[in-house]
Structure formats: C-alpha cells, structure tokens
Length: 251
Ligand code: SAH
View 1 (cartoon, rainbow, N blue to C red):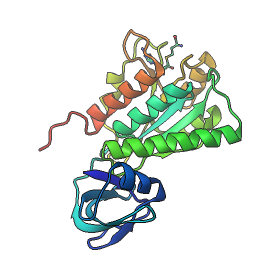
View 2 (view 1 turned 60 degrees about the vertical axis):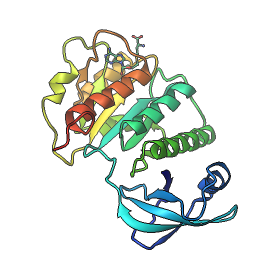
View 3 (view 1 turned 120 degrees about the vertical axis):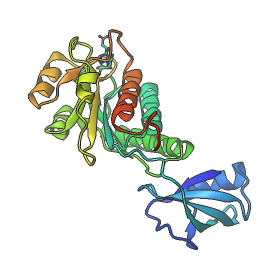
C-alpha cells in the first residue's frame, strides 16, 4: 500500500488530506494511483491512518481518510544518533539505516577528524538532502514518525547534549568495557538513549577525554574496527534489541 507523510495533519476518519507537492508527481505519474486506491497517510508524529484516493491529478491530490489506524511501527525506545560528520555517501547510508532501525533524531557533528567541512550555505544543501533521504526511508519502512535531522553541531554542542544522559560511546580504543555492561541497566521508559559515533578517522584522544569528563563512558564493539556507517547501524540495532523492539517477541 502506498504511503505518504503529511506533517501537521490531524488524522481523523472522514478527513480530507491534500498530498504534499513533492508527493504529487510521484503519486500521479509514477505510481499512477487512481480514485479509490488504498493508501496510508502518516502525520510524522506517530500516527498513521488508512485512506483512499478521492481525486488525483497533476495539480492536486486528495485522500479521504477511512479512519482505521494502523499499528505503529515505532519503537518504545527513543534513540538519538549523533554522527561524526563523514563523507557524502557514508552519511547517506548512516541516515537511511538509522531511519530503518527506528531512531528518532539524527544530529551530524563536526569533530576534529571530520573530513567534510562546509559553509552555512553548503550545510543547508546537505540538510535538505538528508531530510529528503529520511522522508524516503521513513516511507519505505512505514514509520509513523518522521525522524528529525538537526543542524550540524560542533563538538561543544554535542558534549552539552550528552551531559547527564544515557549515552553510548563506541570507541575502538576501549578494550575492557563492552556494550553488554551498559545494556544491563534498563533506562526509564521515557528516557532517550544517545549514541555518538566517530567519523572515518575516529575520535581524537582529547575528544574522548572530554566525553569521559562529561560522564560518557566509552565501550567497545568487539575486536574488529568497523566502518563508521557499520558502527552506527550495529550500535542502534543492539540498543533496539536490548531496550527497544528489534527481534523482541510480542506477547
Ligand atoms: N580511524 C579509526 C577507526 C574509526 S571507526 C582507526 O582506524 O583506528 C569510526 C567509528 O566507529 C569510531 O569512532 C567508533 O565510534 C566506531 N567504531 C568502529 N569500530 C569500533 C569498535 N571495534 N569498537 C568501538 N567503536 C568502534
């Protein structure tokens, strides 16, 4: 069934929802949807409803909600991914996989060893790209929440975000403390879990010292060095398995 996001929409039975311009061409020309076709509309905040196409043309598309809410594809665990800024295609992969694995927020962070450095105007372009990747990935995996991509943080901003939080800091320089040690303590239900992954070149010693000073303890992800995009996906998946909804049997 075709899936659309309409942010800010109030989803109630009988309501008419107008498709976003960015979805219109796709729905009309590519998917060739017609009056009466079944679709799903999600508000990006956690609700998704079934609906049918009422009218669809090159100018306008209207969906009538039929009022059957879908079971949410959202994890009970809120995960925020801080990703050390890596090269283009790696970031793209991180963003897509983070959405699939159920994160709620992605915050790119410029660290000492981040290779891409860009001006504010380039940053706007990157953010636009990541947000459109998020939207496509969220549609594909039927998320009801549209995960947020925040503006790029500097390291000091990341440090502030992590202070006093439940945070997972994978660092290949840590050889003793594994993620298992951390996962033993189940956080409160409402507590968000923060994950901070270094860029291709990893964190500097000074950054690790500052993070430890902010109360974040590094953990290892096994004896193999993972690529940054692999490390991000693996860490989020392990957290979802321990504290979220990945591979968890339903009662
Ligand atoms: N440049 C480093 C590797 C960086 S890997 C080197 O070659 O030594 C990129 C990021 O992935 C790291 O900053 C860390 O957050 C994570 N990572 C990769 N492998 C890891 C491992 N075995 N244990 C913990 N973190 C790891």
